[in-house]
Each structure stands twice: as structure tokens, then as C-alpha cells.
Length: 186
Image 1 (cartoon, rainbow, N blue to C red):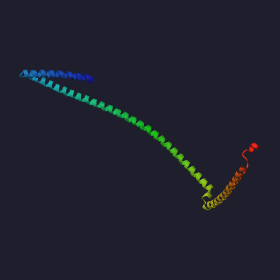
Image 2 (cartoon, helix red, strand yellow; image 1 turned 135 degrees about the horizontal axis):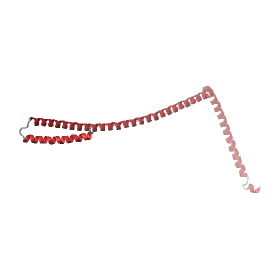
Image 3 (cartoon, rainbow, N blue to C red; image 1 turned 90 degrees about the horizontal axis):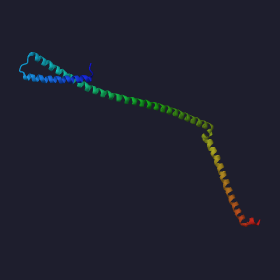
Image 4 (cartoon, helix red, strand yellow; image 1 turned 30 degrees about the horizontal axis):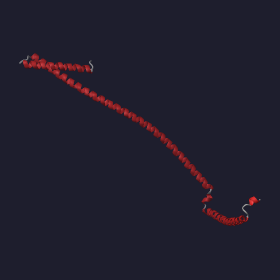
């Protein structure tokens, strides 16, 4: 069996030979007015062989074009397959990262919930310990006591300020009586 290239060369040679034969036969036929039956038969056989060779040559060309088209399609599908594989790998990596982020978010949320629950417990404990703060009557009583104490302290402060001002006045009077160079005298 010949390789496709050898077949192509063989077909081209046959085609060339058949064309020469055809040309010779056409020349002989036109030159000779009458051909005998044997020559006519050989002419028809040759023409049939020539038609078969031409149709085989056309089929080979069509198959070559189909082969080129299929090779291009195969390369395109191979590139697409590689792109899909890469996209799939990227998607797997993204999914893995997202799963990790989701787990971290769940842990953070759980931690936040625990902290919130602890804060609520702490507030409830404080409320239980200082219920008097939430008793309005008790708070009003304590406020009244604080106001009275504040008022007494303000009165005391005013009295002490007067006393301080009187003492300052006395001190300034005493200083005026004392000579400036008292230290040198002593």
C-alpha cells in the first residue's frame, strides 16, 4: 500500500499519461476518418480510466481539505479543552478559598455570638446586683438625700470662702505692719 503522498504522485503521473493519451487519441481520431471497433473500445476504456482518475483525484483533494478542516477543528477543541481544564482548576481553587473564608466567618460569627451572650449575662448579673437602681422610689429617696447633702456642702463652702477671704484680709493687714527688711534685722 502506498502512502498518501506516493498515491498522489502516482495519480498525477497517471493523469499526465492519460492526458497525453487522450491528446494522441484525439489527434489520431481527427486524422483518421474511420477507427475500427478495437480502437474505439480502447478509446472508451481509456476515457473511462481517465474519468475514474479524475474523480479519484477530486476525491483525494476533497479528503485532503476535509483532513485539514478536521485537524484545525481538533486543535480548536484541544485549546478549548485546555481552557476549560484551567477554568475548572481555578474554580476549584476559588471554591476552596471560599469554603475556608466561610468557615472563618462562621467561627467569627460564633465567637461574636458568644461574646454577645457573655455581655448579656454580665448585664443581667449587674441588674440583679443593683436592683435598687431600677426602683424609682428608692432612687428618688437617694436623690433627695444627695441633694440635701449637696446643699449642706455648698453652704459650708460658702461659709469657708467667707472665712478665707477674712483671713486673707487680716493677713494683708498684718503684712503691712511688718517691715520689709525684717529678715536682715533678725
